[in-house]
Image (cartoon, rainbow, N blue to C red; front, side, top):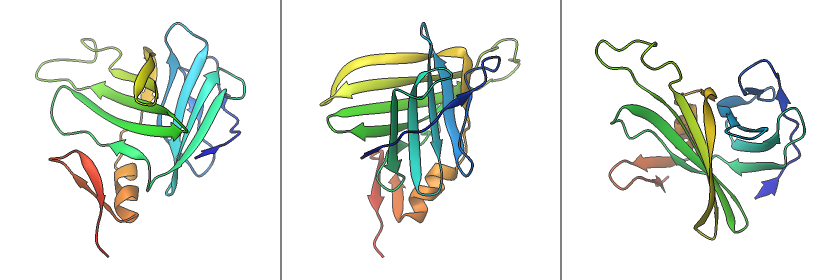
Length: 171
């Protein structure tokens, strides 16, 4: 596990969103409820990057995890919410980032769900939950794309939907 000094750029007038460095895509970003902290998760073809800290300053915690090794749970395909999660590890600590959005059904409109995006980070030490930090609903972005899934597949992994885990394919 590498801890990286990543500079986070945040525009104060814009909801939460930290721009990912050039060459990286955004998985999610948000303002943490009842705090001045922002959470940003970006990725490229080989790594995912976690950044947490005060808005407009260097992050308090920046982590990098290879796509091949990161715990990634794709949306299971059912339910009102479309969500995914990534878990970053740093020694005995884990940081599970969950991001998603509520789908609309039938006659529902955006007025029925004005802030559909949600997110959180679950911090654990040796498997024991220390804290769950929720994102502000109106200040959360989730870029639902197949890119992380495809990067895992390109690294030689296949998703077992029944058992909810990735396994290495035989080459």
